[in-house]
Amino acid sequence: MRRKSIYQRYIPSFSPDDKNTAPSYWFVFNENRMMVCEDNDKTIIPQADKLEELNISPVRTQYLGTLDGHSCYSTEVNPGTLAPEGMVFRDLRSLYLDLDEDIFLLAGKAIQVVNWDSDHQFCGKCGTPTRTMSDEMAKICPECGFISHTRISPAVITAIVKDGKLLMAKHSRTSGDMYGLIAGFVEAGETIEEAVQRETMEEVGLKVKNIQYFGSQPWPFPNSLMLGFTADYESGDIQADGNEIIDAHWFGADELPRLPSKMSIAGELIQWYIENYQNRRYAGKTQNTQKDTKTRRY
Image (cartoon, rainbow, N blue to C red; front, side, top):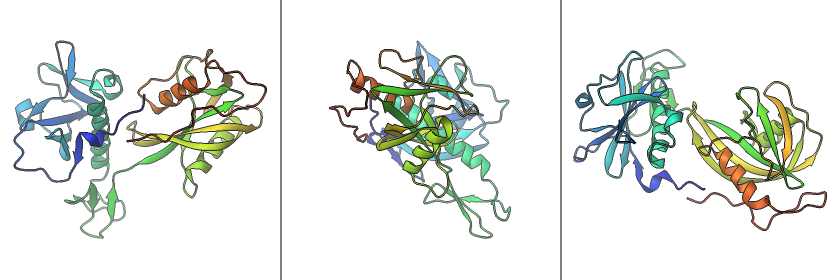
């Protein structure tokens, strides 16, 4: 299922509107855990005019904009902070199925802003305390003028098909028997298509062709932007690198192993493969499907 853009409901901004009287959303983080209200089998983000109403003392607070007319703030609290009565701190990943989709995506932005703000209290060039800029999400050094923006680490993830079968790999950092797709960070000086080719060669020793953009997804664990692609096998035999990848095989649509969560773009790519290749027959070479790969539309 393709995700709709959060910007249909969310308006980013850098300065609060003093005329806005609606209660604000508060994305409160205790390290990588976010505070939520759990009541009557519902999990919601706490709302209040001011954070003090929630009996929470922030270390730092950042304004994010508005969601459905409600101001949104991210905030960091000290690690030993206890959640107020009726609320709990939960790992952000665990909240995917419990929160509204747009709320979860905005929470992903919030935790990245919190971590960036914490890590850029001082200038990386001269060590002077920084200040937050009023017209963009950035820190500026009042001494040397160096500007630090929020950190984004682009990464590619690819569904590779050969003779109607999908390449699935077991990553060394993944527990259990779960298999995933080939993925890795984009390096300096290369295009994203070159990153797809390099990561595939490095991790499993294969060459790919017909690289097509599929879609993207912000991935706040901790600060990635996942760029999804599809590609066809070109040549080579699978040779797992033994470092990041410890096993890899070609799987048909009816024989896929345990798959990643649907919260990730990996799940979307695998679903694309199933929809396009299930129950199709191949005569020894990869064939194009009737459904073209389409860029995700917002």
